[in-house]
Image 1 (tube, rainbow, N blue to C red):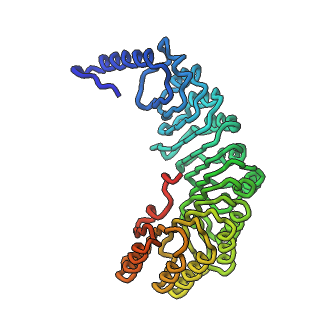
Image 2 (image 1 turned 180 degrees about the vertical axis):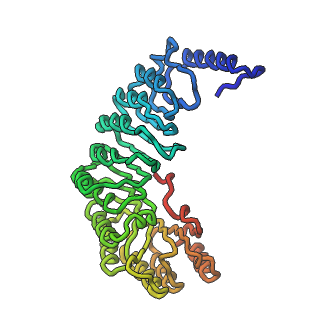
Image 3 (image 1 turned 120 degrees about the vertical axis):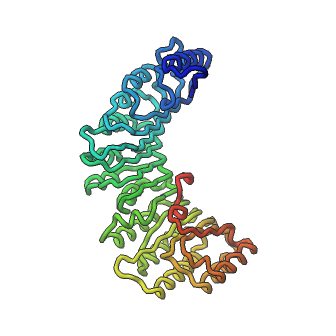
Length: 394
């Protein structure tokens, strides 16, 4: 950002900035990174700009920038590898679509809605994502956040998602309704390179469909479990059981895993099978949810005891972190027995939202096993956001 000193005249500020950017483009041997949100000058008109801009690898922009700017960049910038767009304008930006269209090696694409409008008369997504679809041969990172906007159905991504067969990282932070036909297409698509899958506000069968033929390389399957459960309604028990099975059938390399399930005997049996097969697990985010009835406190403690025994029997030597909410409760005796039997395994970090760990007897137990070296870190927080996996882990 260039600030004019000694004058407040807009014209003088503009001329000073223009001269600076002209000099910068002239002296700069190559330009790798460009944040258009901070520059209002059409620098591609400078005599040396074409050569400098040919080397551009990363571009950050927003949709309020005039399409003509992107048309200008598209003449020179055809080897952008990382493109991040903040959508703040309600109108379609055909210049961005053109810029995407001319790219020859686009690998990383992010789209983030930040619109103040509740209703749109034109679809600002169609041309841009149809252009993106044509980059399936090179794209390996896709992150999308769409706001709910009246009049926009958000159905295009579901239609083209199965085309992006080279993805290594897929992040979708919004609800998308998938038809049975679209789910079948996801099941047929093989994502050989997919390593990180983070889908929020969707049913488990969407995630299960993606990993059915494309989970061999997956290392991280992350989501906020309560948001998933809220989307499930009456299908949670069936879909969660299927999800567990798809993990151990297709994801032998999984390291980080969000996993919600019912406290039924069948669910615990399948979960134990998962732990015995997926030996690379380093971190678990666990949620238990009984959709059939409200459990008594005794039943909740019983489920907690079953879980701890399963973890001990699993012999997960790489497991370093367990995250859980207050729907898992462990008696003092069960927790101590678990920690004693974990002695010859990796040091554990434990994150929980259960306030019982603020009680003195639990604090004393945790501190004891910290001193021994079995517990590496222990954190209690009432904020679910601090128990969930955060974006930094991606």
